[in-house]
Length: 207
Image 1: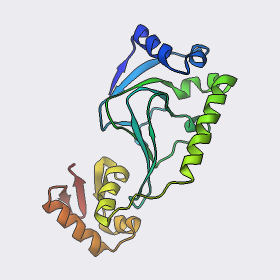
Image 2 (image 1 turned 135 degrees about the vertical axis):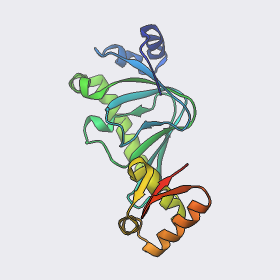
Image 3 (image 1 turned 90 degrees about the horizontal axis):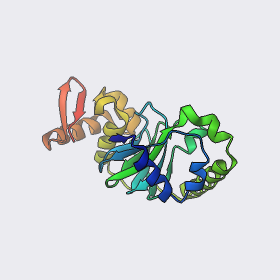
Image 4 (image 1 turned 45 degrees about the horizontal axis):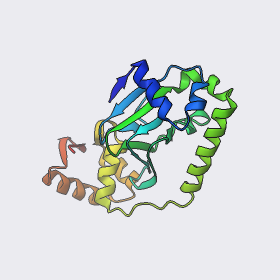
């Protein structure tokens, strides 16, 4: 991730945005963030609350349940909003946005400018439209088919601190499987080089 505070570059990106009229009406300090493919644009692990508008590139947005099941929510390209739901609701612990390719976003602090946003009717109209589309999409989603092995690896990647599973019994409870099944999958994954055992009942994802 690279933050770019060059005012001329930022202004040029805003001028190209289809929301430029509304953005120009906001008394906000904008900047750009560039992401490489595979980087998280938004995740529960990020402490800073940002509002971001995709300027170039694309993202994949998905929901990860506690048992590692993954739901694809949407794909975002130019002019897609990230952080619109966070204006009104607590940040979700299960939604991730990942750069599908090199990505540039127009960004600003949501916490710093929340009141400015809530007092701008034109901006709120954009947010209402964006949220309506997202809610409509979410009503039709299905979980992506996944084997238990895929769910275990997904659970370690998205739900475990530092991608490290600690405690076989507790993890098996969340994954809705037996401890024997989980241990077998961890052993197989260790043999395949996907995880590394670093202690009793403790495994770290290596990928």
